[in-house]
Every structure is written in C-alpha cells, then in structure tokens.
Amino acid sequence: MDSFAFIIHPIDPKRDVTRKYPLLGKWLPVNAIHFVSRFWPPLYLSHITGARSAATGKEIEGWLIAVPYTAPRMLQLSPQEVYRKIIAAGRMAEELGAQVLGLGAYTAVVGDGGRTIAQELDIAVTTGDSYTAAVAVQALHLAAARMGIALQQTTVAVVGATGAVGGVVAQKLAREAGRILLVGRRRARLAEVGAQVQACAQGEVALSLDITDIREAGVVVTVTSAGGNLVRPEHLRRGAVVCDVSRPRDVSWQVAQARKDVLVFDGGLVRVPGAVDFGFNYGPPPDMTFGCVAETMALTFEGRFENYTLGKDLSLEKVEAIEALAAKHGFKLAALRSFERQLDDAMIDKIKLQARRSNDNIITK
Image (cartoon, rainbow, N blue to C red; front, side, top):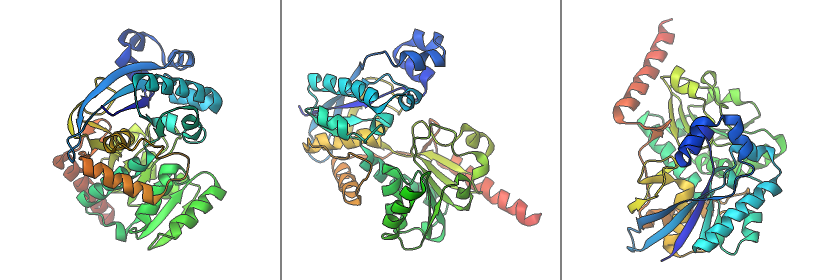
C-alpha cells in the first residue's frame, strides 16, 4: 500500500501537549514546555487509515509524527538545529515505510522552505503550501459570496505577501480583484512580489509596510509566520471578510470578541475522501484536514513520489495542478470554520446583519 507521513508540532503548547501527554500538559507551565521542547526527540503519534480515492478506489496509509519544538522555540533556534530534529523525524518516516513526507506549520517555514530537509532524506518531501494556497482562495470565494462581496469591486489585502503562500495567493486573487493591497515587512522583497502580481492583475496593485492599511480592504487574507495577534479589531473595516491561513493564527481572539460585524474564518480545511481515521486529535474535525496534509495525501493517491512544493517561491502552475489533482481524488473544501467552530448559515447571516446595522448607524449619525 502506498504511504505518506506528515510532521506536525505544538501550536498551542498547553492544549497540544495535553493531547499526547495529559498530565504533562496539565501541570507544566508554558515556559517549561518551550524549554523542554528543545530536548524532546521526534514522536510517533498515529497510524492513518481509511483514506480512499474517489477516482480510483485506491486506499493509502500514513503516519503522523511530531517534532516537539513549539513555534517560539523554532524562531529562537538556528535553522541548522531545527533541521536536525526535522531530519530525525524524516528518518522515522522512512523507517515506517513512507514514500513522501509532508512538512506542517513552522517545519515548512524554517530556513529554506524544505529544500535542505529534502536533500538529507531518501523520500520525497513537500511543504503542502501549493494546495494550502489553492484551498485558501476557494474558501475566500465562498465566504465573500456568502457576505455579498464581489471581489471585482473591492480591495483585497494579502498580509504576508512576501511569503511563499502569500505571494502565490496574491497572484491568484489579482486576476479578479478590483484592487489588491500587498502587505509585507521587507520593502525590497515586497517590490519584487508586487511586480509579479502586477503581471497577473486586472486592477491596481498597492504596496504597504503598515498593517493598519488593511482598513481599506473588504477582503483580507493573512498568511505570515509572525506568531499571533497581528490582526487586531481596530485594523478591520465593517463587514470585512478575513481568511486566516496562518498557524499560529495571525488574527487576535479579540477580533472574534469585539467585532461581530466581521467574518473571520480559518483557511485551508478540506474533507478527506473515504472513511479516514487519523488516529490522533491534532486539531481538525475527524474527517477533515489542512491543505498541506491533503497535498501530501493527494500525491500519494496519484503515486507521485517527488519533491513537489519546496522553497520560498511557489508557481501558479503547481498550485493549479495540485488543485486539480486533489479534486480528482475527492478532496473537497470543508465548511467554513472560525476559531475551532463551524460557521453555519445563521451565524453568517448574523454577521451580515450586524455589518449592515453598523453602516446604518454611521449614516444616521
């Protein structure tokens, strides 16, 4: 049976450690978890079964493996030290029999975006970023339509546009956005991405180093490695649609509490074909997974055991190719979710109503 492995790591230290070690997660303070994560070896988490292609009926198996580093710890350590633990996890995947390895969350971001990892392993490697980008755009289209926003008539902001996923998402959205605003931290790199996006754009392309400029946007996609609380309530216009692809999240919990007129949702969740059992609660609902995991699984269904998405520059061609491949095998965009809960029609209608009331109040005043 063809097989894959996927590497994850703790995003929320207390919550995620508790999933594997209930007592440690309960009693260890967060600072202690950050500290000991440096010394903990890679962990076998679970055997994944039951995923079956809708096109061919082919069943695959896989494994979840954890690199215990927390996100802050990865940012503090040298890339070489982080590489060593990821490579050790990759060796575990090889011993289990995996033919392709997916890199999750910060393990895909550190250093050169998986290239060094791939050179050190004997199996194929992918970050999954191509399908993550594709699913984010799919979800954004669904959310904007539900809120009655036409992309052609609004400003679309991409926060983290200089990153791998952000850059290619910006290129895809520029084909239809009335105006696109690219937000990044490095001026020179932002100008490079701006030139690439301009070649695809039907409208104006604007550049900014200031996160507060996203107040101009009716639609926002945020995908950075900033580590949380980047997008705050005061940054968003009334009735905005915000797709948060980042893990840890870029959008502050305060937005959900203070801005009932704004639709915030998680980007990148898809439903897996077949009766999949991931064997471990790593975050998504039982039959759903992130776009990066789905890319690894789709390659396994197709028997394409090759380095697919690596590095910091993604191509639109690869994004669209993996999108078509995933659709062929039966991966489908899941229902919109926001801060771990599903957004049903009534919730979205309530947000629309609140946005309309806010506008009415301003007009009245």
